[in-house]
Image (cartoon, rainbow, N blue to C red; front, side, top):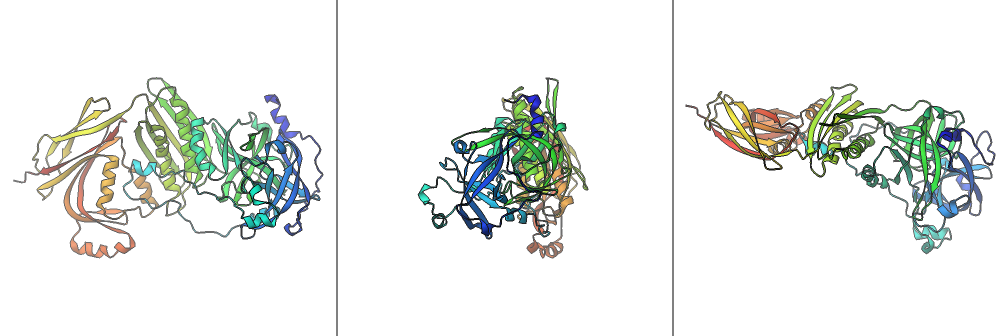
Length: 613
């Protein structure tokens, strides 16, 4: 085993004998590739030593993955491949025939294959992926959100149901044309899974990642980052066959995908031979990588890799490969997470940065926060969490959020709540928004902090309009102990002789308000969206609402109470456009009461008869 101190040196020293390549790489057109040809592939199985392997060309699968999407089928031998099969992480390994580049190893024949059959993406298709795509209009990725927001809204926004990237399933006819018996194929061609290197992540957090990543042929593998990244600058130029990293998270936590360089043209780097996540235009850090060893497995073998210094930016993530450019790394979203443990005088602070992407930024934020909670809450046996945070936007007011969660699912709920506003902002239907930074503070409590609203009553059951009366609230905690609170209420001046009083937790009240509008009331612009996020109903508060029977409407996200019939008729013409929702009662006053970071549940309703004499 190589000593840790000598690891950076291995990045710079290349050993072994490799085929000599011309200064300008020659390429073989796909139409010249024929069965029976024997090619030479280049990859790294250990350390930084690029090693050759043999690729016996079996044929070309034309239009097999889509229009003008072809694969070269080959049998790989040499090095450890006979024992390991096609290895996760060797995606992008270049293959040359007669010293001419034909493409990149990118597909395998599935798990438990008895033969090292692989699909090679033609190099011309990889180069075509660098063609700038035409500008497209801004499109939201999440459905329109109904007002008002509450905990259930925000915790449902970050979803791990990422678009599934379908694998190629060849037909009997396609395989028969290559003279390969269908029954001898132990699997179907699919993209070689990209190992996701992680450091600082617990197994429980990685279990949360795996279902979403596996759908896109990504496989999480724990490993370590190189300790002295300053020594990993481009002293030795990157070459075809070298391992390459595509960063997701950097800092106290690290996450990156790893593959292999296929081709370098000036400042451009072509790698993988298949998608990373098929995001199209992207902004991933492009990094060096170091292969510790190959972990053989009958199921699927994988390279164990570490991540090095940033070399540039991956700006394209296409179905035929990723494309990067040497230079500075991309702008990332700075995230600071503080975990507090009351009574233990301890504050843990974690600083990391996450890639900018409408899909990945919220999901990776959720995973990183969940990992922080899981990794450190064991020390205090936390059963409840209080979350407080701020999302600073580049050109809009900040979004502030605060909530408490408790119970068996408290940790994932806390992480979902913190990442939910990011999903709403980045996937809104109005305009692209830029996240400047995210700060999150989480307080871990070592007991279940929940209360249930049990009963409510007024000191004066028949108050006069304008009178101040005491409203008493009785709660019970999870042990059955009663907790009393009192709120002084100013009864609104009104000509009505009856009012409705509703006392409820934030989620219950928000659901009732959505039903009152009869149709979905939604933000009409990004300003209303930000305001709605800042005003989201919280389950750490109890809400007291006084209303009266009256007619009104919600128009373009704004509540308009006490409208005359003539105005309702005019506004009703906008109903077809979805901008108008009628109301049958009007809120007069609202109060909220914090329950000291306890999670509140329950609701009560009182009909107040006013003394109008």
